[in-house]
Image (cartoon, rainbow, N blue to C red; front, side, top):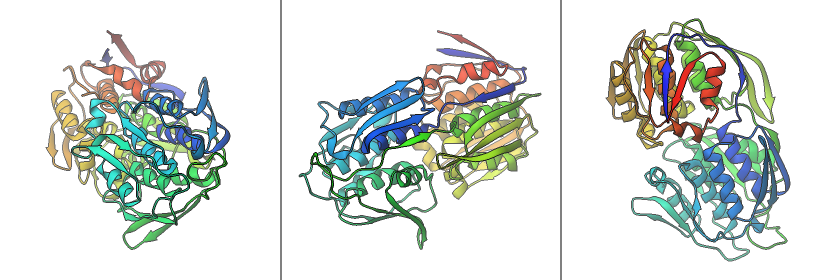
Length: 451
């Protein structure tokens, strides 16, 4: 599918966005690890969450979707059944890494695989620490998927783990936290800087004993294992059933925020957006660049900070993004780069080499596509430099390189450009934000779809 983006229209109105992708992933999996009926409202229905739900079916877990309300009949880890074939995680590294931790705790044999893109993602980050815990796990050459986990004798425990993550990663941290629920003692994980803490919050709400503190090496989390208490045999105790309403996805909101900032005359309201402080580095960065963004009606949504955002077209100036701020906006750099292209002055991104290991090499892909639209951008090993001129020429066709976030960022770029542009391969957007085009159109954007 191709999208033709026609600039020149202001965006006006208010929207409520689909549920947060990270929270939706965790809600489905953690509900399956509990025993009893679980309910998550405003669940994100998309390609990536479909992979998680399909995996749960293969593990013998019953669930149903009524619109965006997910109900899961959790069986506890002791009630999972070994899958009869490989679990297809699609293009979702989150699905694969989180499932690896849960399967390690359950102690059942399984193979985790996915798309060619997923097979390029580094998995040794979870394989090595899982092996230290006693998990029998094998990866493909180079430390990538498919991952093959062997079973474990009923009643046996994994080894407790004291481990310092080489990079701040919520996916790796969550994988190890889940495995640690079946360890023989408390496990402690230390990060160089704090990654998103959705898992700690959600697991604690389900009765897991989670302690966060500052260690000498950085932010740390300690988890106490669950008791071996399953009447069905197997491994690990049980989490309490989950009941929550998932706030709107901040990563989806990021593209609408930038769209309003770069399309002259725009003013939009985004309702009930998740504002977890480990996720809002983009918001802080845009405000520092001069963006007129107000946070209104702050509240807690099932333990997660949330609020409304009012965003108006703004004149932006360049900024430098580095250090811990990179972790707090790691998924939002495609949207950020689109905003920086319209800023006046130089924007520098450092310490972001992790972007090369996302759905695409986001540093190389972003730089190539921005350059095609007339943006003065220089690729660096761990980031990029954009010399903004306050506008973007546009006019050239762009390729999102099979990356859903890059596709949306390029579409947003077109809304403020001088000439229309065409985004090829736009069907990938459905991986995380199926309503993207319809939402922008409802706010006044002119976007034409073609096969």
